[in-house]
Length: 345
Image (tube, rainbow, N blue to C red; front, side, top):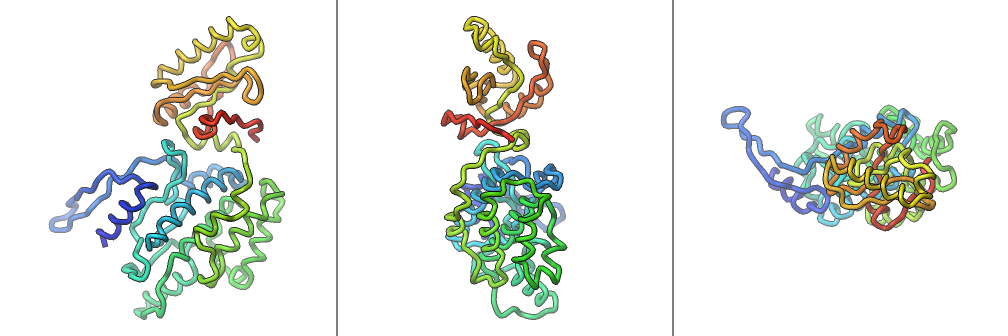
């Protein structure tokens, strides 16, 4: 089983970097084999906690859904099932600017399932629930679980991200079993949900396609990536840029119009900002737009996200020319393209 898990991590190296393998002897004659993986940042579980029951932004939901579906599409194409998809097992990579899957402890090769108890309560597909119950009773299931169990888990995760609510008790209720589609409709129609209303039905339909009780009717990961939901360009909220680290910092409340209009003062203050920012690590580039969008904001690209995180922590709240600095992260991909979001709700 350990070799299977190791092969999964090696195969999915484009998602989670495997640095090495080592053995620890906690007790005599019982070796524990460990995988050394890359250090990741905030988990979706923490993001849900920070959302304060308001739900995540559509930009964050779309970003997470696309990244996880791409990982699952690769994993399923290779014939593997993750089998324990949940918010705590989806983490943000600051260096790669994407969400990554972790914890392949219950993963298995489809058609060769060596673990009977799979998935976590609240994110467990109906067929996995049945299989677990039969295994607990010492009975053999007629059919094994397939990659469709991962799509069920992701559907619940996306629904929780949209609603800001934990749905463990909801999905176990008789009402859900009787008409889950109506419950999903109710969640999306709720006035308490503060998300963009116009494109929300694309996300609703995508989630419904993942939550069919019949696993054969669930949309495969590769097909889900073609959903119209992913064709909508969303901008991140300011909360997203505070919570998701990247190598780029965006500094607000630093420059006013007087500095932007006077070329000499502009160059002096830019040099001062760069000198301050270099205290936390090498600055790769620095951009201070004089026109909208982004007028007067300062964008600082560091060599790595570690330096950027240190700078964000220490610069936030600092005084610069009599003003309190506000420091958020900024998507590296957008910065590299020269794309500056005009509105950040």
